[in-house]
Length: 223
Image 1 (spheres, rainbow, N blue to C red):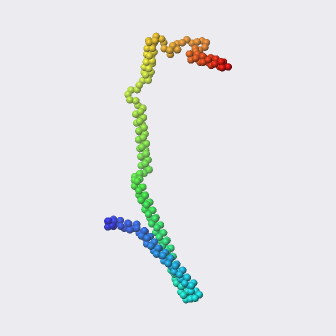
Image 2: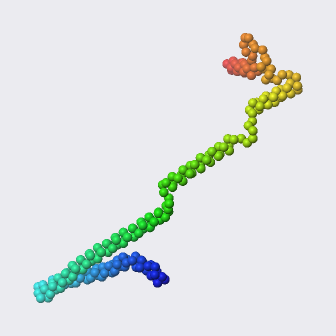
Image 3: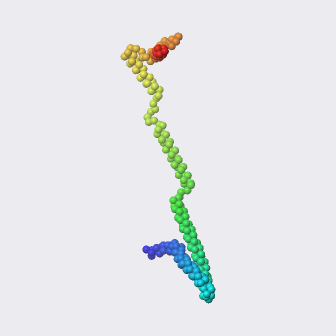
């Protein structure tokens, strides 16, 4: 499989992708070693300082030799500290660069995905599609109106219906007159003579008067 990837450049691409990671791993390994060295040199300096203090009054040569070793350790410590600082900066720079590269790659993929999604989609194409939809909606509305407004068959003559209805009413009146021998109440009411002075009291009006007299009599008896 690795050979196949090598033919198509897959191995080189993977190696290129892993290059920053490998570089950071190498730098961190070196940084770890330098930090251990820094700690060791600090311990050595403290030991030589203790020796110098121990023999400062009794053995000046031993004290002086201890101070020399302390100075040598101090110089190495300064170099080691500087190297640690350089490595930390380099690690941060590589990490930042790698993040920038990965971010740019992600943005490029997003751009390609959006381009693939849009395809030939343009504002003009959208406007054209919306116009077609509006046209079809309008046509559909016209078709519905045409279907619901036009009646199937010949239109019905309203006057003819009214005449037929009046004929049916007259037929019912005639039948009622034949059965009872009297004019229907509704018709006789219209034929009543007019009263010159006053109005004709209906049974309902007479009942209202009787009720009023009854309530008046009940009130008097209560007193």
